[in-house]
Length: 332
Image (cartoon, rainbow, N blue to C red):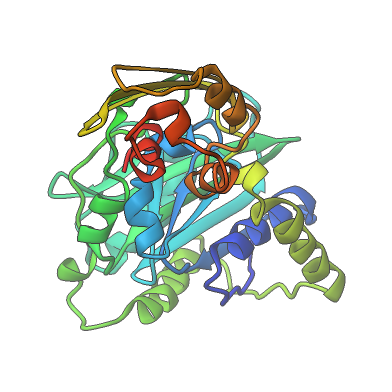
């Protein structure tokens, strides 16, 4: 097993880096370990409905990136106080995913640092019953990617706000995240260290537990070029991060001085496929024209606002403004 250094803090690059190693590098020498840190971001699972998992208004206001990963499971929050680990190795079998078997090296390394942790449920690591790590996994062509978060000194208040979303307006078959009590690791570490020192200590202890010398694998220029191509063509795209969301229905209702508006949307592959608008507002034109105007538009507030930029919405909704109407379409 070898360690591949990655000091990027860009979440899109880090996930492309991980996927490239997972699917392309030779595993004949035992596989690879990655330890990486990203800027504030929400990483949603492969099978999740992105808009169902995030507080969109808070995410935009705080410049938090939203990126989809290639493994299943729930949405997680990354920041510079969170350390991510990835193990990429050959699959011993192609049967049911075994989170425990591939998480033990991290668990044992944490124990060697004096952190009283344990595996909990199917894929969590906890301290005093509080979660600080969630693990996800993928198996492709006889290869296993086992990766997870380690909340070392994260901003837990930001985590809770960024992932707090009202799901009562959305119906979909996307995999839902499960809320858990969370904690940071740092209060349980005897030494006063930061997340970067923690990374070095964890790395050292992982290889000591494996009883192997720490070897560094260097990526080639071709490897790095291929990773950047993946960033540009996949991880930086709306199609991957939002468009891959499962089909869902949205229902929003608001009452204004000009009357009440109920909007019902059917969204497929991130695009508004169908729209119906109801209410007791007084418009002089048939509201079906407005409904048709929204079809085919990305379910994104900025995109919808642009589509309605020169549209005479008062002709259809009376004294209800465009800004008020938008609040019926998005949970803001």
